[in-house]
Image 1 (cartoon, rainbow, N blue to C red):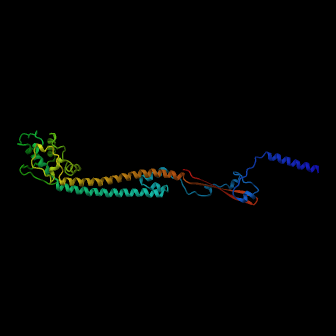
Image 2: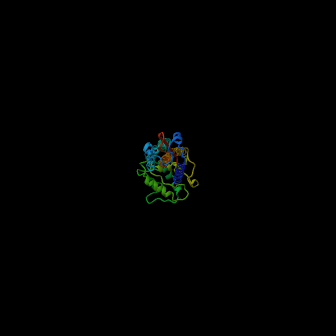
Image 3: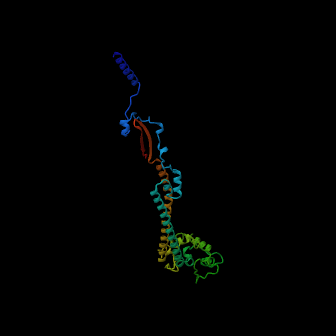
Length: 329
């Protein structure tokens, strides 16, 4: 009896000594009742069987390949919305594509409107304004426009000199010719020389040389400056003026005003077209920046990592599932 008691005491002492050298166990609940309450082996994280640890990458395909922000940006720079499709931002892709299509459609339509309006005001000018009429009135009043001019030897007057230079086939002051566009019968260089000679006298209203017929500046100047009012068929100017009429700064005639409005309308159409071309260019840049950002966001978006582990129990092996979900801004 004493020996049995000594053996029991010795066993308790040895067990206590062995247990004292072990780290204290910590209770971990897995959520699986079979494991938590009936398992012979306590579940401790990190001590599961190594062959049972299966990561998401090994067990389940993610289906979310990373996107290249640079490729996304390049695609959208070329075709707005393409980079967003690549980054799977489909709503923004549709928005950028719609802006692109709308911009070019509006720009094209308004550019065509501007072309048609330009044709109309050119035709209006060719009908109601004549360079030959402007030249003839200027020749008739050249001595008033610049009284300092003197004819070269061989000419009886300044009118005769410039008249014969501008009209090589002959000039009759009493019945000056009146030609129609494109005014091939006139020497345009001689007409510009006359304008240059006139504007040497200050404050007479002659400040420009008429560009060649058909040029953009030709159609701009004839409706812009009073110097060219005499070329309109409703100019309302007297055949002869005196010094009190200088400078030539009279109000525009009715046809001149109508012509200005037609040109302004054409310019408005072209301005709208130009604006929407600019919108299209900006859309390319904004879409490229957004695609770069969208690809970056895609790569940082929702990631799920699922790990499966098995835990041995006295009833067999029980599967455990650990899920880790992170969302990064």
